[in-house]
Amino acid sequence: MNRTRLLTTMAVFVAIGTIGAQILWFPAGVAKAYPVQHAVNVMAAIMLGPAPAVMIAFMIGVLRNLLGLGTLLAFPGGMIGAFLAGYLYKKFGKKVWAALGEFIGTGIVGSLFAVPLANFLMGSSVGALFFFPSFLVSSGTGALIGWVIAVRLKQRQVLQNI
Image (cartoon, rainbow, N blue to C red):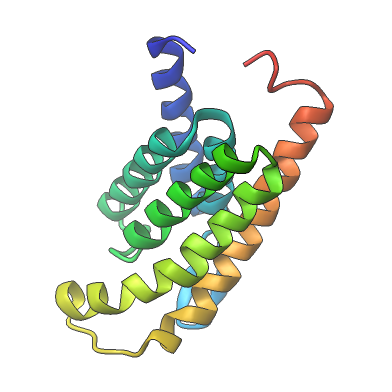
């Protein structure tokens, strides 16, 4: 994939993730679930790889925070999930591994990283179990959506053209 096409694809994913946060969200425990972010992470990991997926997650986090649509907790979950999704997809070559990587990366590892981040940057000293359910629900829903879309795109042979 040439550089212009890569950057354009990344920009489209950032736009989808940012706008999708306004359109599709639901309360999940102490936080709001933004499944579009996780679906974008899975699709970007499959189509572009781990590094571009992490950059996309970072940019979505920046834009969501600038627009007042998210919190600083969008960074550890989104970026770790995107990396693990891309890494596992690259290692095993199956879309289900990308979805599982997003779920584990955001739902488990990201929720653990959220504890010291919330304490240091937001002045909130809560335990790991405080974030765990919300992150799991959000990442699980989004990873499932991303996996379904990726499978459907493959069935329609869309990904081969990209």
